[in-house]
Length: 126
Image (cartoon, rainbow, N blue to C red; front, top):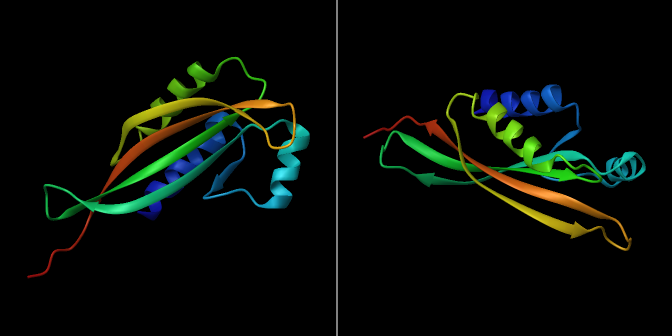
């Protein structure tokens, strides 16, 4: 599990040269993003679910791509998907793109939510 998370983090940070945050962005880190343009990744893991194979669990991973003043959001989304499906046990399931107004400003950004599922082997004891 740790290897998958590290691979996701490393793929995002090295291939796209953008900040990557797990779960949320701290207030001081958000101020830096505000100065330099709000372009970053946030990833979070969801709940565990059973699978057809009782020796494996599945878990959703959401990668949020925040993009301000970029016109290549669709291309970037394809590149993100292509990068993360190379991580062993990680599979693409869905994406959603939305345009959002930034709080208390007249600025807008795109937020793409890309959902992956990962399979996690477990030890089954009788």
